[in-house]
Length: 372
Length: 52
Image 1 (tube, rainbow over the protein chains, first blue to last red):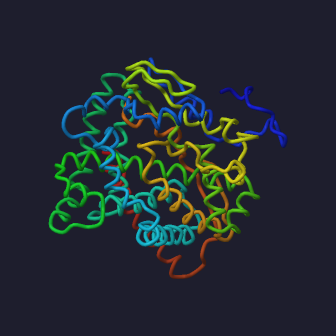
Image 2: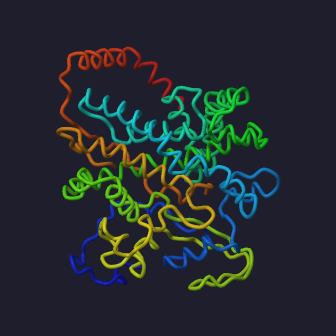
Image 3: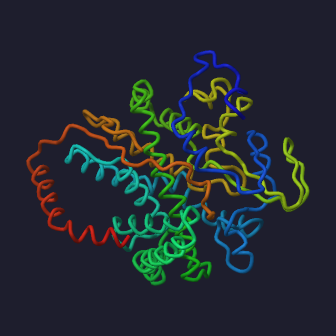
């Protein structure tokens, strides 16, 4: 949907609070040959369908034998998701993860107050790494090293932008980074948990008979999903509050429910994950979208999140009351939907809330430089 | 393309926040010591970060 298709906003027809729209439009494109789905209803129908499977380079690699949870579908995926859901429940958050969120936030913000300045993405990344590491079970190595190792493996996500010669070299370097992550962080965690299980993902995978290599792949998946995306969202949410004094004041004075509503509304406009791909496994009519067997669909979560049919008037404006007015879930499509909906969504919102609640109360806090 | 294409639609870097610096003596001393330590380790840091 283009901006011109959106009904006029009665408050300010030109108002558009999105900060990442242009960047996302430039960075994220449908896979070649994929058909875009942009309506909220269409995206939801596809994601909830049992007639599609995960699509994307890498999906074919795991057709036989072990498959990471990201690429699983059907009953094996349902079983795995059910088994790991206990690590992400509200109870797990309130009884275990919240302590890590609060302790790490206090530590990081103590450093900020002592120095008088800090890079926000450094702080948010250290927090996200600490929380995700606790859930995954990557707790047998130094957090700063772990953060560096995970960040270094992300070079592998940028290989397609490189020329073939450079790409080959980058693949070798990425391999070294992955080895450092494995030997420095994953292997010590596996060894420790083979001796004594913990309440975390790695212990669960050991019980399931996963090999060390398979656990490594799962760890890389969780690392990107849990550490890197949350780092970005925390910076984005803070940026919105620095630019909107009323929003910041409302966040600071609000209770937990109010704060969550504000964060979910920001995330609606600025979803970190903005496009998912699915391949139809049969001819199927998804309501607004019909697909033949084998069709690849590019599901535009950003477009779905500003679909005025579902989000109401002024779709490009931050309105923390929107979900209540529309009587729906505030994050809309930001965490996906259906069987692959982000399992850590509540963890991400909770750690962002805990951190920003403390950050925004620091005396004299200012955004000296906006993010690049 | 990679499995996580589309998962990261933006990356925000170098946002700097500032606040009133705590004037606690111990905190200031720790920070100064950390700065001196970092300066001594800088050549090694550069080497390592180039490796990454």
